[in-house]
Image 1: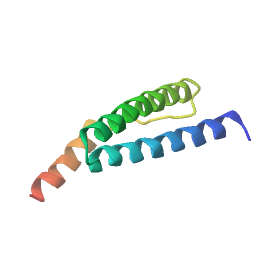
Image 2: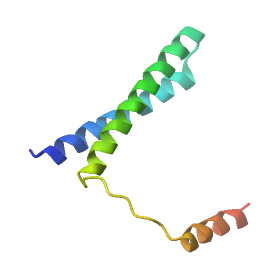
Image 3: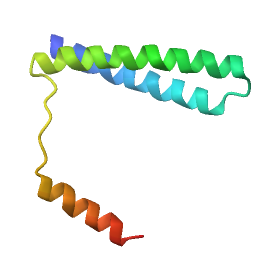
Image 4: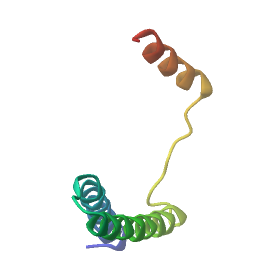
Amino acid sequence: MDDKTIMEGILLTTKGVCDLYMHGAIESSTEKVNTAFKSALTDALCMQDTIYKQMSQKGWYSTETVPQAKIDQVKQKYASAN
């Protein structure tokens, strides 16, 4: 297994953890539990950001720039749906 594949796995796992912590914060029944989940979520989001930045620097996580015309088209589509 190469480094890129390992990093992709770590990133996906971290994103899953973020999702779990977010739902834990939303569904928590006490302030202490809510605070614990929010703190864990913040830490996990920072970790996810670090992993993403490392992958991006190596060219392993590329994004594409969307033309403004395409963004405007989508905005119009959903604005007219209301």
